[in-house]
Length: 281
Image 1 (cartoon, helix red, strand yellow):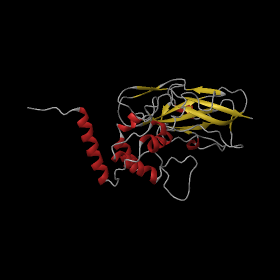
Image 2 (cartoon, one colour):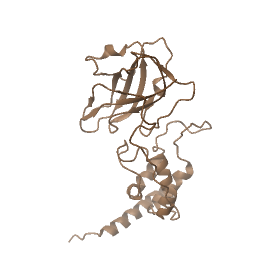
Image 3 (cartoon, one colour):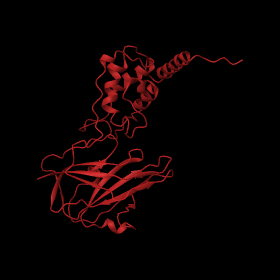
Image 4 (cartoon, one colour):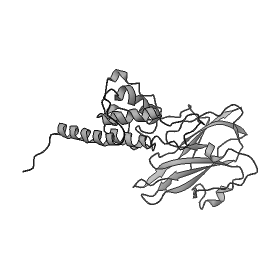
């Protein structure tokens, strides 16, 4: 005869096993560390920009229930520094906007998970930030949209696609900020923006406005322009205004090329990005 185990006992057993595993991994349980007081501030600052509804993270981490279900996973990926993503090596040089967790934060997450993910007092928790689903810097001066969507295949290897766009400006303008809206965060890994003043990339399109495949682009130019890695989008990235004197020039009939890295999601997906441009004098 097979006896069923009550759900509350299953939860207790899972927490006990998780505690043992995390203890062996170097984290001793500490019941004084709670979600609302110690863990929520870290998740809301470093994880929630991607891990919230409508963004590229595969699950939300805005609430205690969200995090409790994945306490062991959060402890494991932060301990390995796999999350949050931050590639520069640790050292004396510090970057503005650095997203690396401190050793203290990683240790607290591990101890919290090992203790069974205690919730603590909700009054200790910071407010959930007022994330916007609209343009981060307010309405752009000009919005440029891809003329045709690209259909990502359901499966297969990662691929790169290039959208060629021509901003509708009648005179020279200077761009102080951009915001790239990828059009489908579920399949885009990142996107880079390039200037094409000679409109050379259009020759690679089989059909005008359709775009073309390719990863490493060489754009013909006799002008110094920002490298594409300075004009980019990545999940959770913030749009920023360039410092005074760092605006870049946009002339009539200049093309913008948006090079996107697409990761198939298991089903066909449409990708139709747009770019918000903010001008200065």
